[in-house]
Image (cartoon, rainbow, N blue to C red; front, side, top):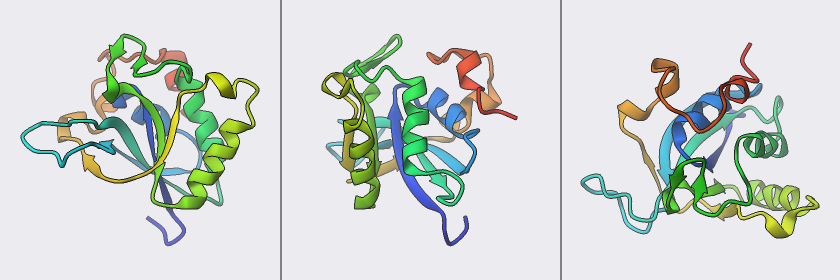
Length: 161
């Protein structure tokens, strides 16, 4: 990472597809599959209250917070509560999380600028805790491109060069 690298955490359903999509967004430096904002500290595979998410490091000189949120909105149904595609449950909720208050303010402003804001259920919250996913979940669709993903392939690789 460079000294100017910033990070955001994006939840958009199953983390495999979200990570694969975000890794190719210009300005994204690195990604990591994980879980955010759970009710308890993870122990023995218990992810009570956590949202599957992707920790995203980006260069703010190449891509803005707003552009990253716009990219997330390309691959999610922002009106669907606790479900993306066939994946159902609170761990599949959509959200934007950060330790940086300016990121959260900008995310909220972007969402509130939408004409459909009253229907959007994407949560924007401070990151309270984060757990990195096991190695089997890291870069899953890069390693296993034929695994199932709720994001259509033509959309999944839209930013790929």
